[in-house]
Image (cartoon, rainbow, N blue to C red; front, side):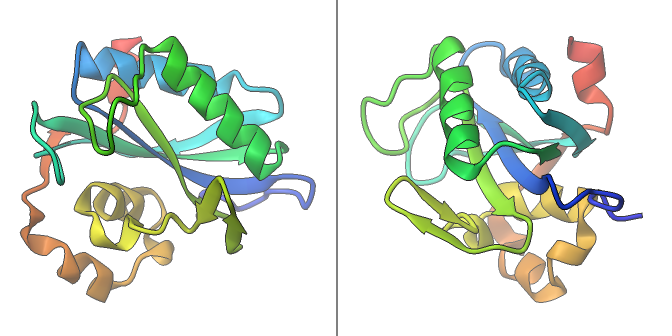
Length: 171
């Protein structure tokens, strides 16, 4: 069954990319999932396995990445603001583009919509270039990803770090 099956018109299916490469990465991601699930009108409907990848366009330790699907009644900018507040609470700093980070939360997909706002573009403009988004997204919502998209990122060296349920063991 698709993760968004049974969603009402009053809510939205949203895919959120999670990543961290500083500090206790697994714990930071598990705590972020708890915080996301605790947002008003928001519930987690699926969480991918946890994957390890080298940083893209920067240096630093490897990232741990996952994708979560949520059902939310929040509007796009309200969810973006809430995700940025969760990042800030986790010690996220933005000294320069692609800097190492304690937590990174990105809205990857919003239902089947395209959103073009100064602060938010959905689908995420680089998601189709990133194995660390496409592979976990294909795990929880395979109908959202094509085989050609996965083939295009096949050489990016993504590695399974923990199987589904990892976030329950970290909490």
